Length: 66
Image (cartoon, helix red, strand yellow):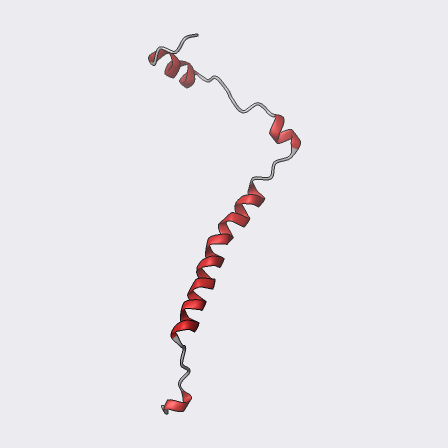
């Protein structure tokens, strides 16, 4: 293989490529998280807290006031 046929990548080009790749990798989860967090009005208004037997036992064992 001749020296002319080799593709050389300069130090600055390498660092630029790594930086762009790292920025793209960091923003991808943020975009998907924003899409997943969108709730409809019905989902925002529904009751989320349920006082189950486990929760009642936790309150009793830790002596929370009734």
